[in-house]
Every structure is written in C-alpha cells, then in structure tokens.
Image 1 (cartoon, rainbow, N blue to C red):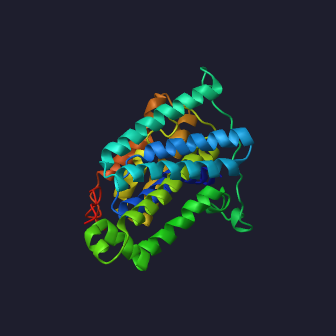
Image 2: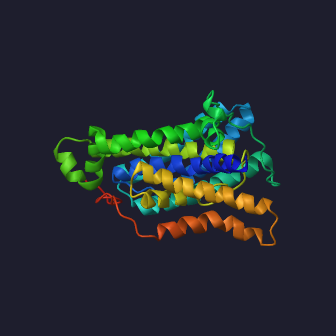
Image 3: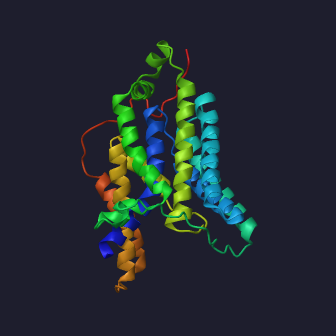
Amino acid sequence: MLLETFLATGLVLATPILLAALGELLVERSGVLNIGVEGVMLSGAFAAALAAWGSHSTTAGVLAAALTGTALALLFALATVRLGADQIVVGAALNLVALGVTGALYRAALGASGTALVLPTLAPLDVPLLRHAPILGKALFGQNALVYLGLCLTPLLAVLLRHTGLGLRLRALGDHPQAAASLGLPVRRDRILMLAVGGALAGLGGAALTLAATNTFVEGITAGRGFIALAVVVFGRWSAWGALGGALLFGLASALQFQFQAAALAIPYQLFLMLPYVLTLAVLLLPSGGGSAPRALGTRYDRE
C-alpha cells in the first residue's frame, strides 16, 4: 500500500515536468530554444488557479492554462521568429515578467496577506478492473486526465518524431532550416506552430501543478520546474522516452522527499526539499549517448 501511494504521488508530481518537457521537445526539434518555459508554466499555473477558483470548475482552469501558455508562446514567437530577437534574452525576460505579473495579480486578487488559494482538484479517472491491479494499479490507472495526457503523448511523439514525415520535417527545420526553406517548407510558420503547441503543453503543466499536485497557488509555485523541464529534454537526448524518464526521476525524488519529511527525521527539512533537484542535476552530469541537439538550435533564421 505504501509503495502504491509512493508511485502514484511520484507520477502526479512528474506530470507538470513531463508536459512542459514534451512541449519544449517539439519546440527545440524545430530549431527554437525557449528558456521561458518557467514563465509559461508559472503563468499557466496562475491562470488555472484563478479560473478554477472563480468558476469552481477544473475544466475552466485547464482551458485557461492552455490558452495562457499558447498566448505567451505566440508573444515569444513574435519577438524571436518574426522580429529576429535573441531567443535567450527574450526567454529570460519572459521568465522575469511572468514572475512579477503573476505575483502582482495574485496579491491584487487576494490582498497583501497573500493567503494561499484552496482550489478544486482534478478528479481521478479510474480504469475499471485495471485500477485494482497490484502495485501499479493505483499508480497507472487511478490518475487524473493530465497524467493520462502526458503518458499517452509520450509514445505518440516518440513515433511521430522518428517514423513519420512530420518528424522528418521537424528535424529538417532544426538541423538545416535554409535547406528546408529551399524545398518549399514554411520554416517560420512551422516554428511558430510548434511554439504554440509547446506553450499550450507548458501551460497545462502549470495546471497539473496547481490543480493536481498541490491544489493551491502561491507566488513562484513552479520553483524552477520549467528549468528542470529544459534539463530533462537534454537529459533525454531530445527524445520523448528520455523526457519521460527524466520527468519520472524528478517526480519520484519529490515523492521520496515527502516520505522523508513524514518520517520526522532529525534532519533539516531544507535538505529534503533539495533532494529532487540534486538527484536530477546529478543524473544530468552522467555521460549519455544517443541523440544530439538540433544543429540550428537557438540560431536566428533569416529568410533569403
């Protein structure tokens, strides 16, 4: 029973990272580097919390998060893809603006006290029969819709990127955009489309954080998870399965630190809070083979 709870909690905590990482995977495969994922996740988390709190509907919260993430990603696309601004600078600015705006709006809505919101929770969608399977039943088949979305998107994107014409098209955009343009591919349009999809998924990652993992919102609630999602894409060597592995590592490490805190050990709790981040960074330092970054990642594309 304890193992089932541990695995179920780890999967819930992994979902915000997984959704954001899968979105960023598509973005980077198209040749764009959006380090503003943290800001998009935070804005999505705030939009989900505000919409769910005001309407008492988790569906409204999820939709608000996806729309907010898409809108911010399109702003990023306007500045970088259309106007040619530096992707790193715009991404960093997006993170700072999101942190300031969500904090200001949060205090404006709740007053200077900054009382944490109590939000409705995404209901679990039990799979009949499988829900009662030993060990993995509760963890895999008694989860909310966003967990299932992340788990289903992983194999779909894995097949799409490696075995379809669309995947080949994305690799062409990320490796040789000039050559792709010479073949008639709309490089800018496709990159903007991938940014919109990636923004929506990062926004949904924020919704998974507030409406499932924590059921509340406080300032800076993402706590670096957007940057972890960026690291997970690198750790996974730009593959969907690798992103899932990295996200699960962070989620299970987070669940483990909750177990340690519940054990009331005579150790400062700050050390337990560090555990997921330290383990994730330690794994990133290990040598890994497999895929490599798109050759044109982060570089400006100028149409000839």
